[in-house]
Length: 251
Image (tube, rainbow, N blue to C red; front, top):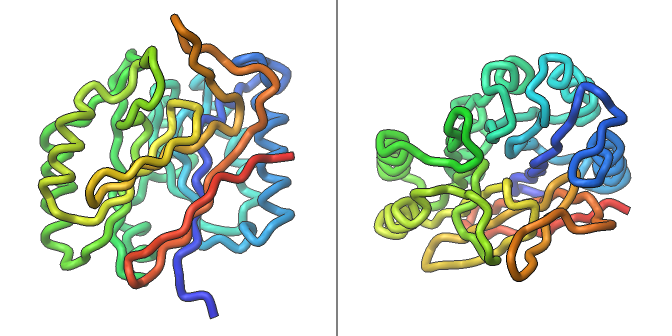
């Protein structure tokens, strides 16, 4: 019997109220449907929960969050969300709660903690996590009695390709705080529209590709990559602190 926690991470959907609108040269709604079809056609349909990693709506409209709720409602598991720089946080929260207390119940069943962090800065593409929010996460890790934690936020902390898109502007400070905490941490992000997997000490940085379009790095810029496939990430957390993860690309 599987005793782990099976998680889906979907991020950067960039849905629009106008389903025919294209973003980054791709059709957000059609690509989201492709990703959901891939999930429904695989064992991932039995996931314990899903985390939405931000930028669910590209246009920030109420109609778009209604569309997202109908679309993602086909997943038969609880859904938790964190906002991205394109999101209207209040509208997103009405459709998909950032309910860390409820998510905590699922994670602690397998001996993990979970921390959902809002890294958005109103009106800006870059992200920033306030000192008090970092303090809250570090303090809760220490008081929890747990040795393994998943931290989810929208903006990427590890920027693996030049030139850098605006990511988390205090990324180095957060990385140092997490390393100094001596906790085993999986840091789960979106925003970069690329697959990232980097281990640094006891911290593993995972970036999940977009369900809409991916970026590629050129010598002088980052731009949408043509003919890219949408994707999502699956994770399996085990009670012994180990985890398995892979990116799934929709056909």
